[in-house]
Length: 480
Image (cartoon, rainbow, N blue to C red; front, side, top):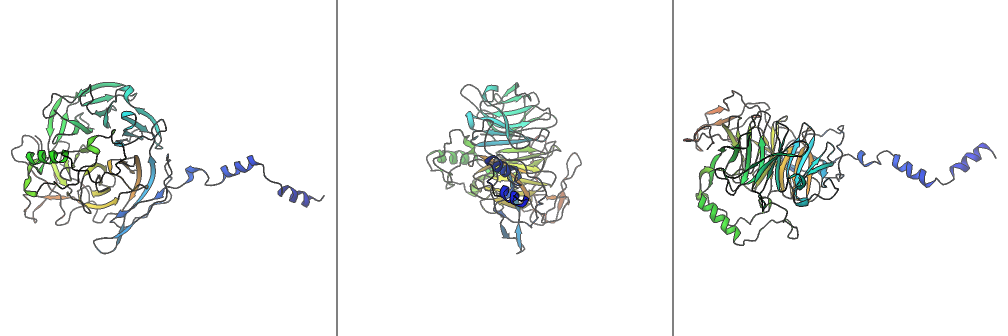
């Protein structure tokens, strides 16, 4: 037999099954880690910025299916768009089971770890590693029986807000990095904390502990030993107390909750503050508002020590410097484009000088420049990657990717958000003196006791933030 016939005979033989399986495994692109992240979701407003294709994708517990990108007409009549890519989706805890409702989220830049407060197992904190895979959990075995929020302080300790239980009051439990409790601060016996339920927490470089909560107005401030220091209370036009009480009684009297995502969903493990509310028929009239302290649902502290306080009640963010002097506020309450219906979380991107705010009821993420001017929004109600079903808390990781606690989709989405600025960059923003009928021709720059000015895109006429000094207050503006 010739050599040619031997070769042909060998080539015509069937491959062994094991060799065939090996060839499929070694084929380029067969591994799931080679799949590139998908572009997603519906977006509104903003010039196009192409996302680079050279960046390596982060590992994900779930591959991100293909999404989409949407263009809309901008104010100048041209097509605008913002690009969002789903990088990873977290849905399971350290045991591999679905983790339930993600109520809060914190990212530790020092260790590249994400802490997610979830409803599974009666409530616990799941820690995800650098590849967005669950590694370990902090739960009942170590004293985290009813976690509501988590923060890692400058002292590298883990501060956990906990709600009331049948045997324990609302409190802050402090853990070391080995997840052993080292101290507990009960949130009782302090002014205006009778029915206080903590919702978020942050610790500044001086060790002051800032806590927001339900059934209160303003931010509770504790010293580094957990002792009461004072209340920090932004002032704005809010409902009179009688109107607040009336609205609460009407809501409890049996108005059917509209906008509930699915009546079959078990909400027993979900805090009341994160459940959809009524249909808004009993929303107060304008003449029921008056100047007073606002309710604060969440807060962040940036690298300068500045405080960003988010009010669900007024739909605004109130910005204070590290000395607790009010700098300015921004945001507008409403249910239409560019407004905040029920904001629940915020994240500060100091590199790009923007602020992200999640809107729980509008199912959107709004983007503002650091001065408070609205730039974009993206999202919408849906189940696919890049869409939201009642988003709550936000965070940013080392790659400046946005982490969104997507509550009723029971997941945390990691998003790469790309956009361009619509206005001049690195201008000093300014605010105006006086009341709402102020003379618009008299702007003044933002100045603080530290003689530091904000850098970021500036305002145009009619688009400025607000800064008010509150007469009669003792101490810094907005502090009571």
